[in-house]
Amino acid sequence: MDRLSHRWWQHPDQFDWFTAYINDRGLQTQWRTTTVIFTFALAAVPLALLLSPAGPNSAVTITMSLVASVVGVAGALLWLRRWPTRRQSTAFAGLASASIAASCSAQSDPYTALMGCTTFAVIGGFVAHFHTLALVSFNFVIAMTCATVSAFRLLTDTGDIAMTASAALIVLGLNVGVPFGIHSLTHALRTDLRTSGHDPLTGLLNRRAFGHTAYELLVRDHGDGSACIVVLLVDLDNFKNLNDTRGHAAGDQALAAVGTALREQCPETAVIGRVGGEEFVIVDIGAVGDPAVLAERLRQAIADIPFPITASIGTASAPFNRCAPDTHMATLDALIRAADVAMYIAKHSGGNQVHHHYGQVSGTSATDGSGPIPVR
Image (tube, rainbow, N blue to C red; front, side, top):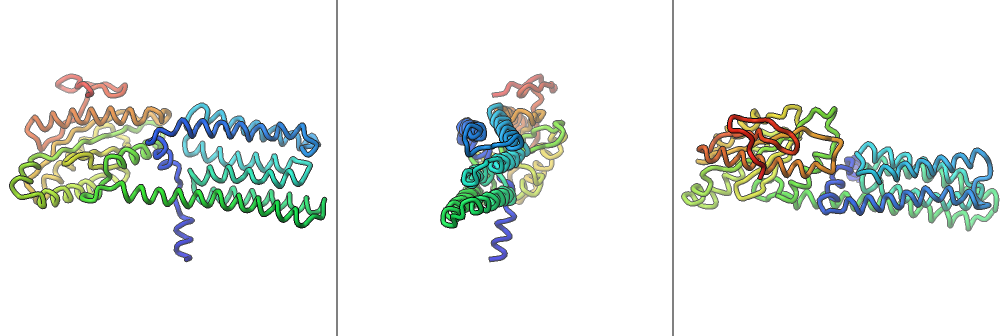
């Protein structure tokens, strides 16, 4: 039980993969719209309570409510503008929790303040989808602190133990059940996706999981903006002949060996997928836009496996624009098409070689000896 609890606590931040999951299913606009609407609605609550006898009744508490509303509006505008980065999302959640705490503390009526603590469950649910259990717990601690203070005020003012206990149980139930339940379910979903997203023969990602994981890679923070997106497309030479002469069992063994070679030679950060019968694609973010060294290493590793096959490898790269996440997948698709063109040039030139695409790809341009190569 202790080991299980430790593993649950150590779950990594979920922002990158859940963002990729939403984007892969075309749901980003819906999520952004819903987040904007709910954030604006919550930001309006402190303003509305200024008109209530139960609301703030001093200059300090009125100021606290106004600040809470302003922070809420700023958070809504962030989501209205674009999908945030992981750091921006974390800051949004932290500021939202602080704003709710300020708004609840500003209410003159302790019952209103106590029931306002149910709003922490909304932020807790958001954090549970996108972030770590530690951040969920941070929000929970703030919620319980505010609820405890408000419950004490309510009990002192009214002496009504039953009402105070009932209200406190509602706050506790929502702030435990919603965030921690969502976090557990989201983690289970991620585990299932990882299990179902691998090709059983090679152990590499299948086509759908490759796209999902590649997007997760691209939305991460990759430093100062000097990095490049690098794509390598690998197609096996003579694979059909191997199947025809030695049988499909030998072909399967060769594919498994290729999968092992790709995993061993590629950087740990690389996303590797099997996207066709004997076709593989690799994407990574690197400081150098020329993947020739890695491509040659892969070519040699495949040539060295104990089967009569080699590899034709096409490569392409483009500057990584970390400020434009909405264009990442379009850029990746263009690079894959460019690498595909380069791979066919390598194959038609005799195979067992590497060709890099130097033509214009998603706004970058250069020339090789044969001139620009069109992106298909």
